Image 1: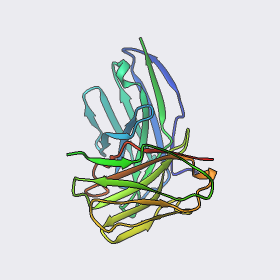
Image 2 (image 1 turned 120 degrees about the vertical axis):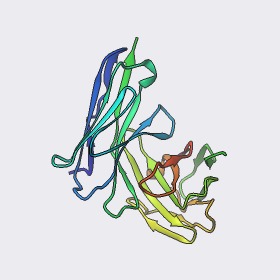
Image 3 (image 1 turned 30 degrees about the horizontal axis):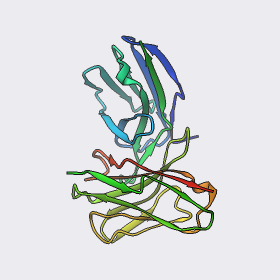
Length: 110
Length: 112
């Protein structure tokens, strides 16, 4: 079982749509969780951290379910500029390194 | 404040050649990382460093070497390049592993 698994995508949605990405992780000792965004042929950049109580940043909402080892990212009112690959990331139990999922590609069309 | 810089941006190597990928950060981060990203795949950790003089292997270290003589620089050395090392290489840094990792723009390497 891969350590971090994501929906492969691509997700094709129209502008204004709501889209949700799911991620599962296998290491129950993982302590911290993140969503990174990677534009085509660019470097990854942190989108948001994921907290146990869930957290929101504008149109983006992240949720964590430790019991199910499941992380989600909800994007509301999608914009063309949201088109990118979204990477689910966990902090390893040794607290020194991150494990990245393969990413889910989102394509928002006019 | 340049953040994380990488050179070169693109390089073509012949099988068996060697090269060094340069990485530098000006944020005074202790932690630095080297990843490779193959098409359609996630980032794989090659090596990382928790401070000057300290390095450790990641998930895919074979065929690579690193050194960390200063806080700012973390070069990645490829010895005897192989086609399997064709990839995009990203360097990253952070204050602590729990905090944001800042990535460089990447080096695209093609081994023929």
